[in-house]
Each structure stands twice: as C-alpha cells, then as structure tokens.
Image 1 (cartoon, rainbow, N blue to C red):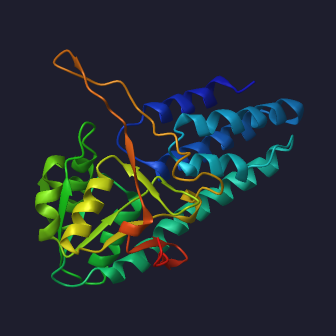
Image 2: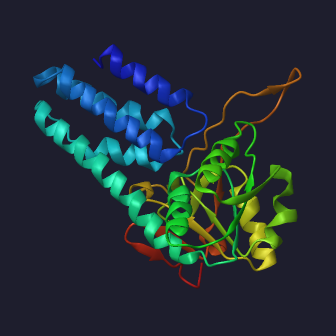
Length: 275
C-alpha cells in the first residue's frame, strides 16, 4: 500500500495546472524519496509495483512519468530506491542546464522568438542566451485556459527580456513576425511526434506557412520508448464557461515534419527528410 503522504504528492501532481512534465517528474522523484523513507522489504516492493501503474496515470500525456516509473527498480531495499531517485533528480537538473546551453546557440542578436505555454527547458534557453549577451525579444501566448504564459512573462521580466503577450487565437497572425519558434514538450513519441500544450500544432502549422523554423526543447527522459503518435492518450479536464461546457483537451500532437530540430541535453536531433 502506498503511504498517505505519497498519495498526497500524487494528488498535488494531478491538480497542477501551470508547470509541465519536468516539474511533475521532479515531484514524482520526490515521491519515491518519501517511499524510501517510509517503507522497506515487501511493503516497499508492493508499493513500487503499484507506483508503476499509478504514476504514469497521473498524466498519461507525459512520457517523463512513465520513464521515471521504470527508472526506479521494484525492490525491497530503500537505499536502492533513494539512490535511483536522487540520480534521476541530478539527471533532470543537468538536462535542463545542458539544453539551455545548447539551445541558446539558436538565438541570435535581434531575434524575435515565439513560444507557447511554459517550459522550464525553453526558459533555460532564454536564461543562457541572456548570460551570453544575446539581445532578443519574445512573443508568448497567454496559454488559456490555465494561463501558463503569465508565469513565463514573470520569468522574462526578471531576466530583463522584452516580450509581447498575445491571445492563443493570434498565433497565426504573429507567427510570421518571429524569426524562430521554440517550444517545450511533454512527450516525444517513438515515431518522432511532439506532444505539448494544445495550440503547439497550430503554431507549427503557422510557422511552416511563414517559413519560420520551429525547434522543440525536450529532455531525453521525455522520449517515450513505446508509444507512437496514434497511441498517445491526450488528457482532457472538465471546463465550463458561463454555464457552458467547453472541450478542454490539454495537449495536441505535432508531426516531426513541421519541426526543424529537437534540442536535447545530448545535442540537436534533426528529423529525417522523408518525414
């Protein structure tokens, strides 16, 4: 049985509205640390087996949770669980840092970067670009209905980066005003498609039409080893507006043919020409 304090962390993860796959993976690793502090032997082994089922279901659109649940072995030894969870946290931190360093080389002086939603990896790219003395401007969406764009706007203010916020409906209008698009990812499927906040596919189409290169920033643990784009379960949350039910699928799927490259901690992956 999973202890109540761990279940509480999982429930907080389910209710998270602003931060994405990297944050949830970090919280998931912290849940494993709690397990290691609470259980041992057969009780721990049983809880870990249950976590392999429950953790990915917290958000089935996020490969990071699936990969984390497989990264932690099913064992009765709490020290092994603790060591693996701490290793995952270190890998996560290093991945975001390396993506920032690699991805910042895509941002030149005078660039206008358009982005959608909030991504810690994209923010890392912006932070490293600022540290390298690049002067650029950002166009960002408000990212309704949870308005993740507001969180990014606050971060850009702290970095001293000039930005302009637009409604999601204006993606097609403003994509052509950018020189480059950079977005995050919650999953990269086995066939190379990118699952990210709904609206990313529309941005990709608009960038394709305007000949604006679109890059995706994604840590390697966001690559799903099994799922194809047709098999991804897209999470939907209830949403009403003035008494009317509004469909609220949180993610969409962008085929690799619309993506110039995927920035990982290992370098930039370039899609094959036949996709």
